[in-house]
Length: 291
Image (cartoon, rainbow, N blue to C red; front, side, top):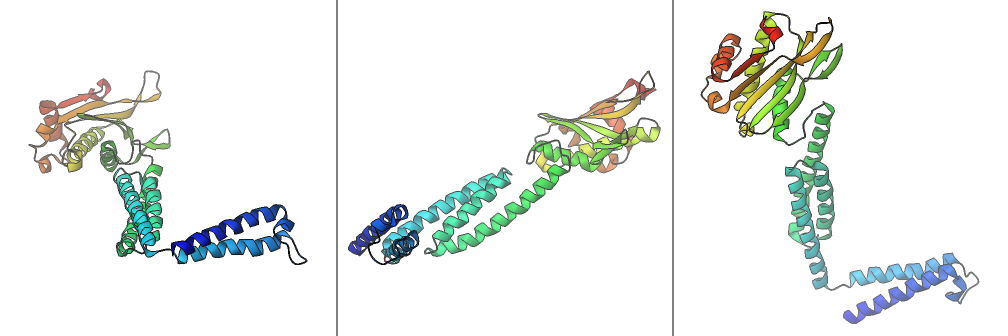
């Protein structure tokens, strides 16, 4: 069998070299017939080279085929592992590219029974990664200020749920969340809709503060957050009679206090939550708001 493969390799090399030389000068390799052109070169030598390759592959020993399949299977599993790592990091495009390559490698290892079943699972994984990528792109279109997959993104989602995705400023829609800094303290600056003008606005501010703090402190994904600082921004009228956006206050609460609370009692109860912040946390308002 090895002798036959050696002969086929030699035939391929002869046919290939003949084709290259013939494409440059056909008369050197075609010594018969009236038509000695490049078309005849491709017909004779090109077909001969292809036939040698096909015969060589068909006569390849089973041991060699199995060894090649095992290498492709190993390559496919490594690529799949890379794809899963990228997926866990929410790098979905890399996950998709690696999964595509993994499927190609596994299909080349079709002699192995386990390769076929792994192709099916990898395809399902690939479909999930594509869906996740589309969802990620949609989220980015919605104007998030934080990176996908981070604790800041989770906190921002809670903020957008409570404060809304956008508010109006000068007749235009702008993002409700201005900035988020995550560490021991989750510092969140956000815009309240409208201007400070009534008691109901003050109560809504405190209700929003309580709702946001409850969501973050009770979310297991936010367990790293030990303190929350909220800094709402409002539209005020300055001394020249012009509307300006400025920070309207600062409210803080520690997790050790939050974990003791019966949130049902404070939910939508602005006066009670204001008293709690004043005694157990921090409750600070802009001078203009205390008038």
